[in-house]
Length: 76
Length: 209
Image (cartoon, chains in turn blue, orange):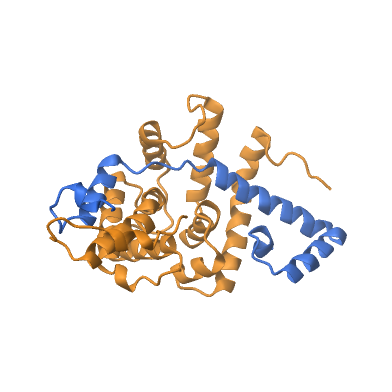
């Protein structure tokens, strides 16, 4: 069931699953509910932006050993 | 995500050669491959720690470690998954030792936290002053956090971050079958929690045949 919701079934498995849903109302309802639950989580959980200070310090960290101005990263 | 152009680092020129070309190449690649995931990592850290300061520390330590061990990152695999795993391990080492009782959620704390941070750092384009939206967000958030951690974790990694089962299995160090059944059971629990809200706000009202 989860694998069907998350698109993790093989093509063959998915075909079998869909065939099963045609004749099994219980599974069909459960499948619809699970999809909705996933959708709600996906859309309703607020994603935050990382603070700019954090981004800066991480950029800093990856160039920590250079101490050169940024123009050392020029391309030819 | 865009792969770094392999021709670029080769053309990189340094003026005073303070760094080896390899080091510069590594920096560029690291920025293209790893630093681009900073928002996802930050959100994951927030969910784990429930504290913006701790989350920042955790993300910073993760990137430090990731940069140091970047050579061992298997090229062509999912860098975001690799970073998440480092962050998770860091979190366990740092916080789990002296953790509070598991499974206990302080809803007032959660609510305060959620509101304080939402106002300043929200990444949504929606009208946040809309009471309907903020309420719904908050309820979903609380419902998610009311789940036992092992369920919440896989739901988060799957539904919010979009990792594959295989990637999740690797991250939580469990077989794929376990991931699958946790997702199944976790969603069932969530559904029970959300049913009330869902009916109220128009999701889930029709049982389409």
